[in-house]
Image 1: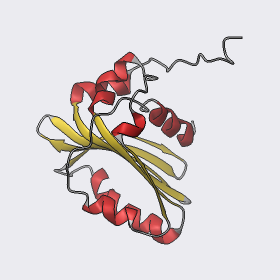
Image 2: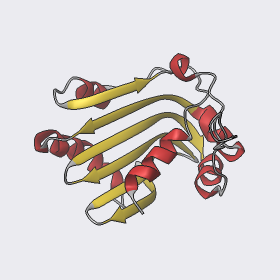
Image 3: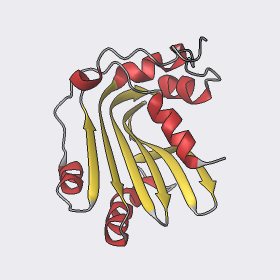
Image 4: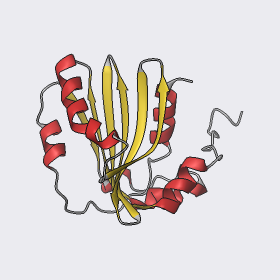
Length: 167
């Protein structure tokens, strides 16, 4: 099992219907955005509104996403910077973050981590770490455990129908 298809599938399931971005503390995001050598992609609610390609079990999770930030680094210095920012989130004894799942394959790992606040998760982070690249996808929003469980445990696959597949 390769991590890139998993990450691609997870991300593909979320091009979606977003709600407006709410004000928040963006210190870490701003630091990453201002660092040379880190690629940054920001997806706002207005950019992604109208997408309906997700399965029914993802609907609640998708509706809770306000915006998405994608950060990636391929040079050693910036990989280390990103690790220093995100590694505290994946510690098992973290009082602030909960690791929802992880996958390890060879020297690559993928973690889905949520920032805990009561019975809700505020913001999800998909972290993919390998010796040659580090990718962090930040899903900004408020999620219930039920929304996350339904999305992660769903056996549904997105529709593969399209103009070329119907022939």
